[in-house]
Length: 191
Image (cartoon, rainbow, N blue to C red):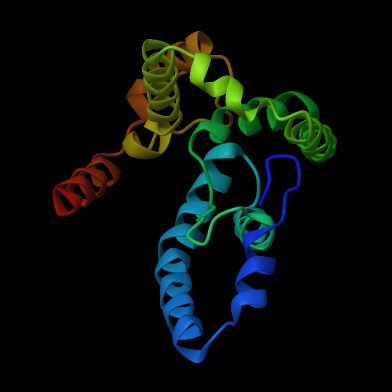
């Protein structure tokens, strides 16, 4: 396959011959990925402020498109934690219709960047920038879960980081010890 002529790996695999053994391996891998990705999609949808079903639908459609158009035999696609922050902000400010529009615009931009071969630009991003971005996203996702962790009685959580922590402080007296106990037990089981 030449650099200028993209061909999805699915086409290559089907051309080479797809056996029952390969299908069995792919089915097993798909089952494992589904067990991991679908509950994660539910959790990310709820954290993003959309309906859980929308997260599952997105994971299924996105996973299918990634698998069908990927350039790798072992490509796995699924929900990404970094998008929780973006989706929550868009939904909070523009609603679900705004999210749908932003998704279409992002898709067009991704296709344009792919056609322009801009994926190689990633090698110019320094490692500390990547680590800092990942740490920042982790902190923002952590802060988005405190209402549920402590069982705080709040109608809505502000999207802005600083205002979110102020709202948590204001609602600190409404926490539920039973909810905290379940949350701590869950973390203990995971660890």
